Length: 126
Image 1: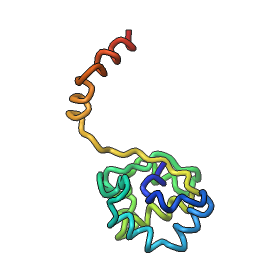
Image 2 (image 1 turned 120 degrees about the vertical axis):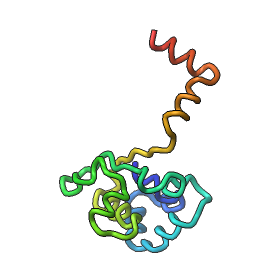
Image 3 (image 1 turned 45 degrees about the vertical axis):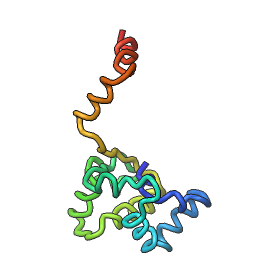
Image 4 (image 1 turned 180 degrees about the vertical axis):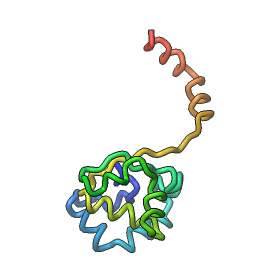
């Protein structure tokens, strides 16, 4: 879910309160996404161009599906991709899926070829 790009300390009071924080504490949330590295920060680690919106609940935001956060921001003329993320999360009541591209194919093949993983995978395939 796209809400994984929001720092975890904003989740302490449940989903309704998170939505309110995304509205009322917008600048602080954006600053924490950009600057803080004391959490699993997908945006900082992978870049907004590697975070793809995979699903939304409403028809109004279907045009975002299959596009990166950076592509959506560029198409809308929004300078800060964090604004796109916060807007989508609020509009969709947090129901936004994402795909994060964080490894290239060479890394995946190397990982699959190490240890017992490759053997177990081949046994499962029969």
